[in-house]
Amino acid sequence: MKIAMLGSGFIARFYAESLHAQRRKDHVIMVYSRNQANAERFAKDYGLPFYSTSMEEAISHPDVDVVLISLPNHLHEAAVLACAKAKKHVICTKPLGRNAQEAKRMLDAVEEAGIFGGYLEDLCYTPKFLKSMESVKRGDIGRVLWTKSREAHPGPHSDWFWDKEKSGGGAIIDLGCHCVEISRNFIGKNIKPVEVMCWADTQVHPIDAEDHAIGLVKYANGAIGQFEVSWTFRGGMDLRDEVMGTEGTIWVNSFLRTGFEMFTTGKGDDGYVAEKAESNSGWLFPVGDEAHELGYPHMFTDMFTAIEENRDPLETFYDGYVVNAILDAAFKSADSKTWEPVILEDWRGDEPEDRQKDWESYDDDHYLIKDEILPNGDVAVILKHKKTGKVSKKVTLS
Ligand SMILES: NC(=O)c1ccc[n+]([C@@H]2O[C@H](COP(=O)([O-])OP(=O)(O)OC[C@H]3O[C@@H](n4cnc5c(N)ncnc54)[C@H](O)[C@@H]3O)[C@@H](O)[C@H]2O)c1
Image (tube, rainbow, N blue to C red; front, side, top):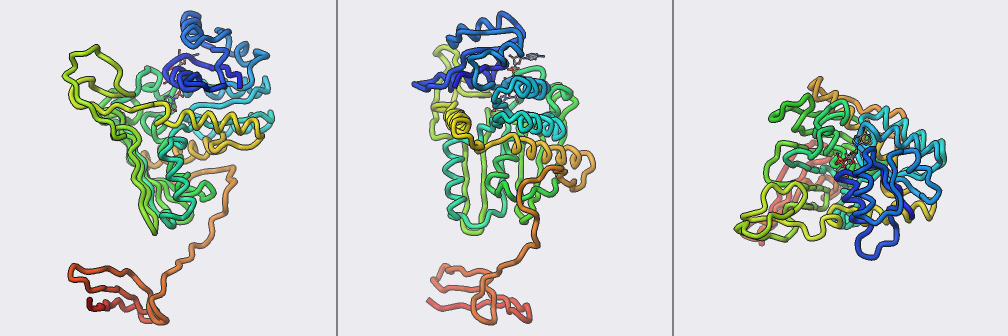
């Protein structure tokens, strides 16, 4: 693939680093930046033959196969509409929109234009996440009941993130989009998210948006997806997921604890340790290959292979739209302090069904509540009578 990069900031560089790493064959050939000097510098740093200060020129360049949007949130829609007009495949960083209405217009535009729309939700492509999903799909942890996804760091690196008008919100839109999509994958994308309860506050920074939030997303099958997001966390970037199922549990730590710990007095050159690391002396938690740990190589491989195979990628514009709809409900709930419905005018998954409770029988008369081996080796079973509802305990001696 020959790629046009829109934007030359933080994520554009991260993407370019992973696209041009090692011996990958897909290359950025063009960069758009409104600032000529930044465009030139980016093109020089990554050896690109073309750069432009015109977004339209960059998108419509005849050699470009796919456009990669790495612009601030308020510019995603205009960039997607320009790709649709030029009939160029597009992949867009997260969040897709500042709200579901914006995301829906982007979704409609790519579908009407018949172009590819990939949602760059990198944290749904980390090696640990992909392997966890395989286990969940195989049924290793049974029916998923609860997920928790947490992303917390000391706050973003650019002014526009802190401006609610440009970003669409604070930590909820910036980090909650990752957490919500991680939970949706574990719970099942075909399961409808129905309502959200969210607490949000501005605890530390002088901004209009929230810098800390915790939310619960209730799904039609009874599962709960919890998100914890913060721009007030000190100590680096905390990326953790937990999944609890009827038959098992998964805990994933994607960044601060990857098994790489190092101490330095700080006497060497002041260096970069890892994204949002707050210190480069003392005990440090570096990350071996950040782009890989954050999922970029797997994400781009899926996107470009999907274009070639004329199939959907794992993360589509439709997913980005559903995430935005869930986050819209979270913002509403933080204001109303009540559960708020997730409004999805376009729902493509299963219709909610009456939940059937499928209790495990112990014998003809009893359901099994649980069994346990006691410290002395006896086995206790806790039972519920099917007709009377009486709860009892039966012990088999060791
Ligand atoms: N893990 C991830 O997937 C991840 C991580 C960081 C950022 N992002 C997303 O990437 C996007 C960009 O974030 P970033 O961190 O690179 O921001 P950034 O501020 O570092 O870079 C933004 C780029 O857009 C340019 N820009 C700003 N205003 C512009 C305007 N009005 N017109 C044209 N260009 C303009 C800037 O000059 C810069 O090149 C955001 O949507 C953000 O949410 C995703």
